[in-house]
Length: 82
Image 1 (cartoon, rainbow, N blue to C red):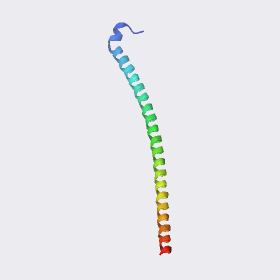
Image 2 (cartoon, rainbow, N blue to C red):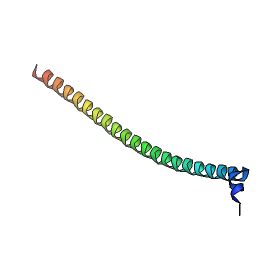
Image 3 (cartoon, one colour):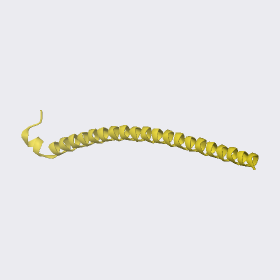
Image 4 (spheres, rainbow, N blue to C red):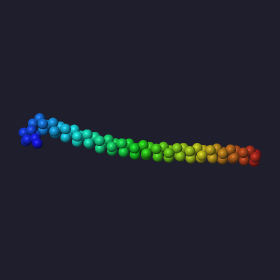
């Protein structure tokens, strides 16, 4: 068992430094775990946004195709009427 003079001397400083490093390592570990969770959440949100954007583009393409078909039908109708 260390004496009180040991705790205030080099042994105490070494024990304090080791305890500080252990605490710092634990804090870094917790922060890293939270970072990985946040990163996974960001990737999930990105994937959802990408899927929604692809669906919107596909819907726009269908709309453009329908409009072109309408224009072709209207042009054919006008040619028949002339």
